[in-house]
Length: 445
Image (cartoon, rainbow, N blue to C red; front, top):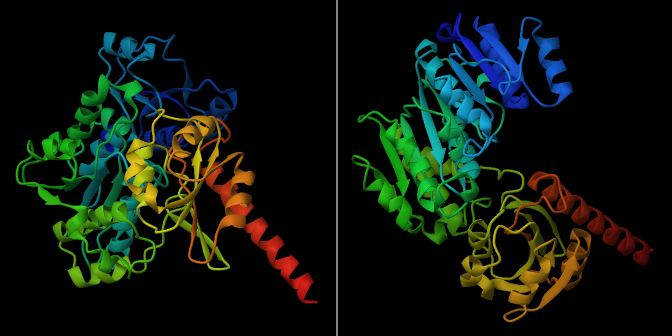
C-alpha cells in the first residue's frame, strides 16, 4: 500500500468503510495516523476493528470534529445535502477523499508522474487504454481512482530503465470535489454532457467541477482536452497552452485495425490517448501498435460473443443517452436493447444514429416511454425483461447484424448495478447460443 510520513500523528475521521474507505484506513494507520471511522453497516465497522484494533469507532454526526486534520468521505456522499458537510465546516475540518491523500503523499513517493482523466463519458476506456499503452512501452504504471483497486491500496511505483512510473487515475467529478492539491503532470478532459445534476448547482456547477482538475495544475504541466463540445472548448480557453485534440483527428480507416476501439466515441478516446502518450514522451509508432492489442473493458462496448455471423456487444456502462449515441454510431445494422431507470424522458441525443437501428427492444422502467418514441421511426419490441429482449433479438438478427445492449439508462430498476446488468446479458447470450448449438447437434444426428 502507499504510506507516507505526511500522515504521521495526524487525526482523521473516515466516513464510509467500503473498499476505498477500508484501503484509506489501512494506509493511514500504517502511516502512523490516528483514525476514527464510521459506517452505518455494523459488519463494516466490525471489519475495521478486526483489521485495526486501535481504530476508534465514532459517527461524525455525533462526535466532536474539532481538531481533526480531515474528514475523509466516500465520493458517494452527497455533500450538497448531507448534514455532515455543515458539521465539518463548522469545526473548520477539511472534507477530502482518498485522491487528496494520494496527492499529499506524493512528495514522499519515488519519482513518478500522474495522468488524471475526467469527463462525462469514456473515462474508464481512456484510462485503461493509456495504462495499456504505458505497459506495452515498458513503463511502470498503476491504474486507479474511479477504476480498478483504490489507489492507496496499491504499491508505490519505482522507476525502471525505461523511465519513471506513471499513475493513471480516472477521476469522477465527485472525486475532484474532494481533491485540492493533485497537480497532474498530464490532466485530461474528454467531454461534458449533463449528468449528476442532483449534486450540483445546475449544469454550470457540474462543468466547474470538471474544470477544477486544471486549476490544480502547475503552469509547466500539460492539459490534453478534446475540444469537441462547447463546454470543453470553454474550459480549454481558460487553460494556458492546452493540447487540443478531436475525434475527427482519427480516420475511420485507421480504426479498422483496432478491433475494440470502434465508433466515434472511441476515436475521441484514441485521440486523447495519443495526445497523452506524446506528452509523456512515448514513441508514436509503438503507441499506435499497442492500440491493436488493447482489450476492451467489461461492459464498455465489450464483444461478448459471435454466433451465426451475429456479433453480441455488451455496453451496459452506457447509462445515459449521450454515452449510448456513439455506440449506435459504431455499427451499421443494430438490434438495440434499450431501457432501465431513465435519467430523462428523451432519446434525442441518439437520434442521429437511429438509421443504424434495425429493431429496438425496450426493457425496464423506461421501456414504455422509449417504445412510444421509437415506434415512430423503427420497429420496436416491448420486451420488458432482458431475457425476452435478447431472445427476440437473436431470433430477428441476421448475419452481419449486431445485438447491442446499450441501455441509455441507469440499471437500478432491475439490477444492482450496470455490471450486474451486463453480466446478465452475457449469461443469457451464452445460454441461448449453447442451446442453439445443442439443437443443431441433435438435428444433425
